[in-house]
Image 1 (cartoon, each protein chain N blue to C red):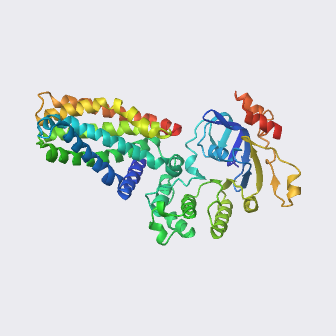
Image 2 (image 1 turned 45 degrees about the vertical axis):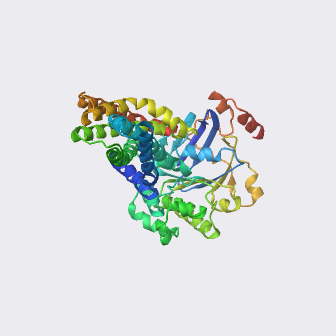
Image 3 (image 1 turned 60 degrees about the horizontal axis):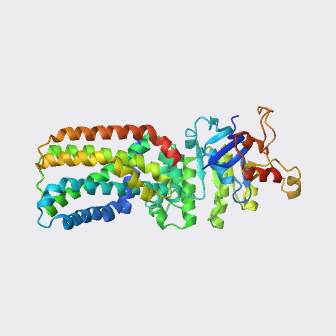
Length: 222
Length: 266
């Protein structure tokens, strides 16, 4: 399973490096979202600094949708999905590999977005341990959940429009938990951020387990 | 000897539609079987069923000794399917695609270079992204992956399509070599003259069924090629319904005009 996961993750990341969709399209999109939030909310940054954690994670959710759609679009082209099924790779390995590749892309995008809220919104990043732990737990959950729903929608002609409808409501706990934890880390809330990290961890474990168990069936139905 | 393919009254559904309506078929190792039939007859579905890509809802289906009604996944590493689509990744190079296919199937990486060389992909084309290739070059890349994987059962859907004359001849040589090595080949082709020259048997597919042999066909063609199903195998229970029996599909609870049409044709 782990060998198959490494093979799939390597293949997906190589495709992204060659196609540069993540760097040339998703990353600029993420920055544009931050800029638009800035236009919409407050030019003098007061509201932006308060709302920065929520805006950051909303932007991450949008990026997750694009990354998941891209991950399964490459499998839909020219029968590549059949090739993947015919390879005989362990479905759990395929799931872990695709989720890992999406997670690595998201980590890069989160780093870019973090720089964005520093320079565009004037946010001072404090509480580094809590910030990193939140980002790690939330990213695992988003990547695993996105991969599960990505393969679920992969075989449908309306997958591009259906995927956001499937994913966004389900990842609401990630948005809430990660936002609360980052607010605690940045000092805009007195809440205990670590309990939210625990929630994010549970979410991630649930979706990783679900994906490992169900991905094979979902892939066959795709 | 374990049959490469053994279907008995196999029914496969695709979106509720019976794409195989009680098909029976035997393919032995070292044999080339050509499927012919009109568009929509079920040739591609038959190939995909043998690849374990379509679920069997009724009947029996064994490929390389694996019971597809129980487990459709385990046989896939031993089967190579080249369909209408090439199953290649546009953003990977020719070599990357072949390497991924071979490694995923657990094949020998050392077989990659000879396969690329054989298909004429070892020069500049080796490092070209598949998106920039012509249709024929894509086809050759998919074929190189098959050659490098060396599957025990080759399932080829219109394998000559898109290839120039030189590479059509090369494909024929590759098929002959695979068969000489003990592999079985099941292919569907509308290019009957070329494909018939390769085939040990020619079978007709219509309405999701493999039609029974026409005794006069071999004499009529003058090719010496047997047209139709193989001789009855002694281990098949006499109660099994044959390929031409549309009642097999009805027995599975399926009633469809396609089946009625076949009974009329048969």
